[in-house]
Image (cartoon, rainbow over the protein chains, first blue to last red):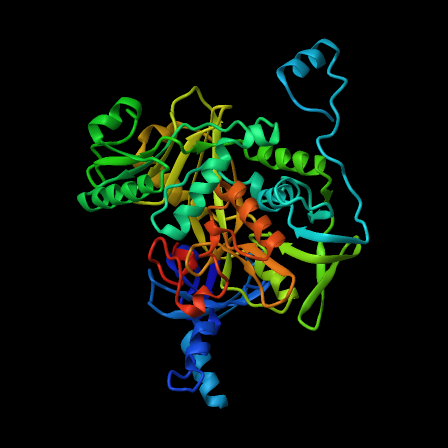
Length: 95
Length: 417
């Protein structure tokens, strides 16, 4: 697979380390009343779709940036690549 | 279709082999069953067989979206072993290994069960200590293991790279009763035996939805019509998340692709199964002569049943580090299978929050060796509504409760297990 890095251009996926579903960016509030249940859900439960999947990749053999890659798990086709920092910044700005 | 025996083989051989018939009935779905098992892989077939054979269930159907033997049961590297450390796992796999040893007699089918031994190599003092500790727990479970130092190993395994500058081989933990079995024959044998006992094996029948009302299941919708069921057991590892989503349930599972490889046929060279202790690499030789081997997951979510080249290179490099002579073998085929990777690396066999819906999944990359045990304990759960004593740890809610069964200590990172 080739990941089209927003800053560095097309890179071999072997340069990256995979973490998983990009919902891991949405860390629950550790002081919330239902924190234990929400953290159990956050840590262990996954949608695991067969199709489009937004996921976190770390450019370990590159610029050490975290990316949010949108990839089809049924075909391995990559349709979008964003910097994770841009994703979280945009989300904060939207709040 | 009659029993298989040496006498029958002789008779058929002398009369032109015209007496053989299909091994199981290709059943059409009936409107209703007491128990419907979804998934015609090894586990589903073993479950359906045990429901009929051990628990006396008369109206059982097994639904398979493709054909029998077309999924992971025909894609694995055929290794059978019971060499786990944690009690929740080892008790179960010990039961499974004992069922493997009598499978051919139970099913009247030659599954080519070969107890040629599984050897796990170690390369440092720390690994040696861990191997001996694991060996002791295996011996306590009654399944047998023996630690061999490098000198003892050289007799049967002379081709390993003992003096590798970076990863010298110090010794290995051998489980003599472990080995390999022919995976297709396991599927066919269970299908034949289950069909003989009255189980309807329904192929090309994909489940498209569940009939759930008021938190209770009443049946399944399929590509061959609706089928009513008192109880439904799901055994579709690889696709557990997809199916359980139809019941509105999220799973502690990621689906990953694991590749396997086979070389051209060679003369007998590897006496058993051997695994590398540094990279993840395991290899054995099939009875046809091909070297069958595999390694790590590709490491990203996938339902594609095929992997990518970086892992091919990684596995081949690990193999050549362990036994340099395979560098000269030519690769014949490679393929991928989809693994249910759970958040602790151990399976799930449990009721679900939906009454009447039961789950057997999350087998990670180790489902084949579990086949007979999984069938027995899942049939027990389906028939009696109580967990089998060998599977009490495999609960669905163990993650939220903090009772994970994390054999490798990786934490909730399925791609690293």
